[in-house]
Image 1 (cartoon, rainbow, N blue to C red):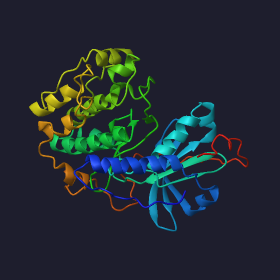
Image 2 (cartoon, rainbow, N blue to C red; image 1 turned 135 degrees about the horizontal axis):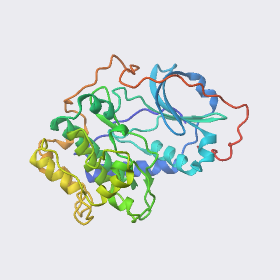
Image 3 (cartoon, one colour; image 1 turned 90 degrees about the vertical axis):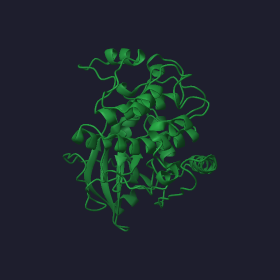
Length: 355
């Protein structure tokens, strides 16, 4: 797969129907094309610099593409771990989704590579760091900043849902802040193209919607519940369903019973919006009603947002991360480097032929 130029094809008023239809046509075309990754020879063009994060199947590294002098975040996954955990189909789907996405507030795939042992997903390096890191530093965001981030997340979810997907892993750790202070939703490991209702129990416990916990069939409604949790956490500094000990069953009981208290720091409008999102009755939950995301975008808490200007990223962010340049990774946690061995033979060539 050749390096792509990141596009900002942003016209219309932040997710207008005409623009979304155009984006969906583009998404479906790219998803069907499923361009196969380039060989390991191309890896020689990249200089691996630092570890940005670690996960169950591999890690994320900052790399520099020497010919272009550009920086990328590369997700490196071990083929063997993916095969042994029976996640091959799951990972191939993530790659196809990332390669088809094109939206300002959602991360996209710039290139993909593979060698005998590993798979490489190259994405833009969003050097402002994770929202989670910044939230942890300041304890909680002022409502103006929470609103600025929340509005972008709403547009990102609107886009993903219009493309026919459910995201299922919305949380501060999966939202990156760029050098201008705008956000990018990242990590599409749990994202799925819907064909009717789905029943998989997946996601992060604190953000799970009641219908997931109760093993009911669900759709995009679960993302709007998680969105309500996110708005609460950004503005309060803690999750509405957190418990004093790591008892996940107690937490899930609180979620199913909608057992939480609004923070006294919240404005009336924010309390009202969160109340409509953290709604166990799907016939009343905002985002899931006949007007869809319009109920959220037209809510009084967002009345100061110019959606078209936000979509075009022409609003100055209330917070801009301190970074010295495109390769500055000071906003990320420090990790000890890990050596990734590469086998002389590829015993999983068949499994990842379509990668």
